[in-house]
Image (cartoon, rainbow, N blue to C red; front, side, top):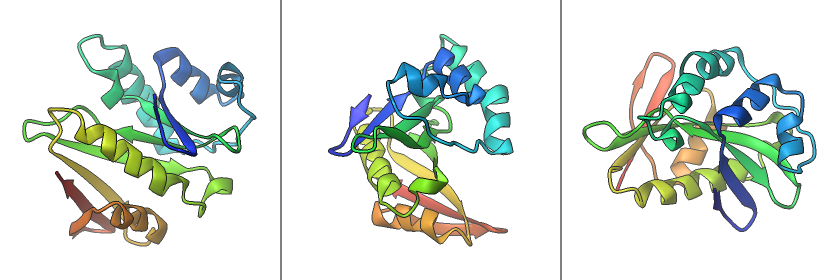
Length: 167
């Protein structure tokens, strides 16, 4: 678990991920939080079942790079979004991040703060040398978060923009 003044970023265990997928507020009950409407996208649901859950179960893998980290707003006492790494550092020390803010919490700076804090955590990991992210070209809010956190735009593929932060 890592914190900022306003946020808690908590990596979810396998059993917590199962509760997250159920989306029945049992995860919020476990954390003593108020219920939150998550709207799990079909692509996230598929990634959870096909990749995230099996990788979190794999004892040979560092689950912190494979699980979802829930983002909790301390003042609201609610989950406001999720952030994750897309696997462990590659041979060049690069990791990829993905993130999403729940609809009712967008535009409040939560994700900019969360991305900044997860970058700080990643910089402290000896194997991590850079972070990659991809955003849809029309998702201005998403790539603004990356720009505010020092990422450089490194290219485009179809409707996606590629971003990198080296340290």
